[in-house]
Image 1 (tube, rainbow, N blue to C red):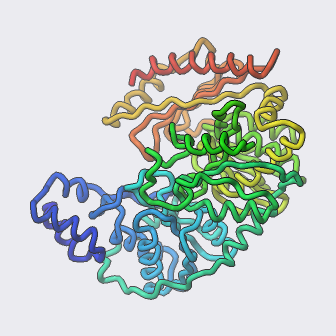
Image 2 (cartoon, rainbow, N blue to C red):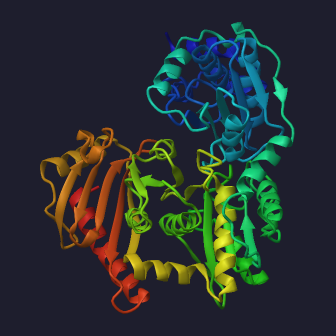
Image 3 (tube, rainbow, N blue to C red):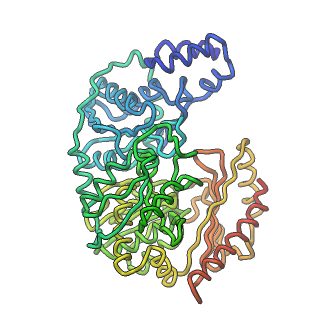
Length: 540
């Protein structure tokens, strides 16, 4: 079938005047290149659901794509099942959420819609709180403004994992024209009682009793500000001082080049605000508030932004100090090995999983804390995890509690990191990424490493090499290589699952023999040497 015919068939079923106008113009001028880009492929449904650029056609996020996804989910769940739907403040998110509800109710399911754009962790919490069978949130997290996405949760409040993703994907492929789908109502609109229940759950986390703290905060034009402020107030903290230019949700993210707190420049306004207000702590959420960035203001201006691994280590020690019983903590193979040492010191079980929070949550029973290096954390108590996914609000609240206790003692989070380094060694991590236009370059690079494995990296002997594709290390097979080096250093090399990138995760472990600052300098030097060696070997 020609691309023009496919485009006309799509146009005939498209209910959205915006994408209809876009597609009509492309068809009228017979822009085959643009049409092929939209119709030559389709967004694939996986464990992260759908995510892509807004626009017409199966290779874009639009109302037809979303309605098909909802119909596929309805087919897998079956009539009578209950689905909770949430959404962020991106372009079309509210429309996609209501379309999802109409398709689900039209198929005989129950749909409950959160009352307004809210953080993703509120949706994950609500699924379990209401005992629903599944949840959907419409979000593209920290992607660029032109993107949107569709994420599915199951009844346990965590993201779906294989083989469920393949089952839903097959059901989506079997859906016919969306203008033939029976549509029902937009479901039951939930009220603020769901947000209140979420706030009760996160303020019941072990937060200690110190509350004197000045916090500078940015939601980066996302949906986090109101919920985070309410959480701080409910827990007895002063409201954070928020970056005014970034306080209100804005799907165009006008003040940042990329709405991700880890990106260069994204935290600039928050750092300036911290200096102006003499804040003790800097906190940021990404646009759907499931991730949390943390910084410590420095005397004279500026700030030291903590890595995800550093925040993970601080949160883990705090949770394990304030919980009891048979517990478990977990992180991924690309995160720091520090968490394993913290777990051992506290006499608790430790789990290591594939990348992705969906795997962390399933690490094992008794999980009270999980994190991934990409600033995602789930903080729990003796009652378990209130949110079985990343929760940027609960993490921010707990970091504030840690910082307030340190401030009472005349210290900061940086002092706590030094304490940790003295106990367990200085664990420093960094990343090396290669973006390519030809994916075969990544395949070739991985093949070279497998056929000619390094015996040393950065001058450190390779003590053990794991091919993760073979299931080495007791994990489900995945395309990746892990090298354990002398002295505790480590390198993980893996192709990205979402971008045309090869990602390398580096870690150096250095004992503190004099001062933590001196150990940090040695670790930085070791990481730089490993990086240079790896770049040469990969030749990308």
